[in-house]
Each structure stands twice: as structure tokens, then as C-alpha cells.
Length: 218
Image (cartoon, rainbow, N blue to C red; front, side, top):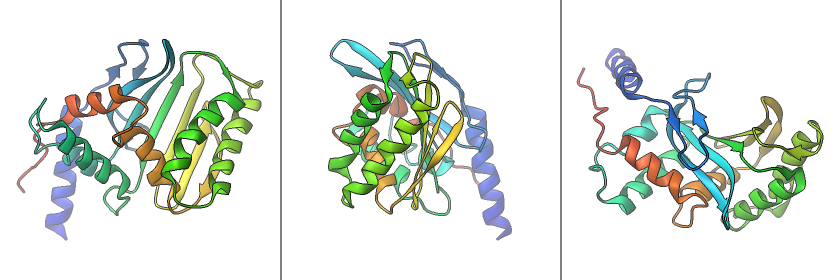
């Protein structure tokens, strides 16, 4: 137990030494290197619709998820690295219980439009009941309604994905949690599977952490 605890601390120290804030190039939006609850920035990207940059998005996760990328050399074996990261980010085990996505709007949209777009991406990836996706959609709409009905430029959505479900907050105000076993994995897949809505996010994650040595001998 003492050795495991020492390894755990060493892993966190290795990540702390290498973590960095990132600026999303297409939108100019910057993301902090670490969230208040200790999750680390994996990478950032942009969600585009035709020529419009709708939002900048960042993924945050645990050192265990980052460690999944360390065996892959930078710029090589990208498919394998993407699969390894996706698996690590959606396993939701004791060492990596949460993966979070932070979205900052760079284009104005009403609540129903942005909620509908996210729900449309989650639905085919989620094997459970459609009512779970509807609940997710409602929480997003509710959060946007509370700020006047428009997700204006600079509006920040946060989705915390766990084994239990997905928690939603809008501009720091928690809206609630969709409690459903598969929806956390489905939301991770929206951003991390082979049809990811932001290929730039996937590439940023790989470019930032592939080949970084996070293995520490204790």
C-alpha cells in the first residue's frame, strides 16, 4: 500500500511537471492546464459546422488516461494511440473515475439548437433509452434559459462523464446529472471515437501527451 501510494504521488508529480495550458488555434480560446477538482488538460480543439467555428472544446482527465498515450511516439501510430486514449477515458475505474469536457461557445446559438446538436451526436453512440438523451438535452436547455435563452459567445458548458452518468453545468452553475450507465461512455465517444466531432481535439491530445514519460520508478 505504501509503494502504491508513492507511485500514485510520483505519477501526479510527473504530470504536474509536464502539464500546460493550451490555446485553441482556430478560435483563440485558452484552456487552463488543470481543473479545480484535479483533472488535467489532455488537449483542445474546435467544433466546426461548415465554415463556422461553433465552440472550442477541451478534454480533461486523470494521469491514468494521460499515461495511456506514453507508449506511442509523437506523430506515429495515431489510430492506436486514439483507441488507447478513448478506452482509458471511458473505463471510469478507481484511478480514473471522471473525464470532463469543457466547451466555450465562439458563435451564438439558442439553447435548443446547441442542446439538439449535442444530443444528436450522443444518441447513436448510446445504447440505452432515448429518454436519457432527452434528459441531457433538457439540462442544457434549462442552463441556457437561465441566462436568457442564448448561448452567447463565451458561454461555457461543462460535462463530467462518470460510470454513473453525465453532470451538466452552464457558466459554472450545475444543472443536474443524467443518471444512466452508458451515457458517460457515449459522450466520451462523441469526442474520441473514429467519427469524433472535433478531429482537432483528438490530434491535440495525441500531440500534447504521446511519448511523454510519465512512468516513475519508486
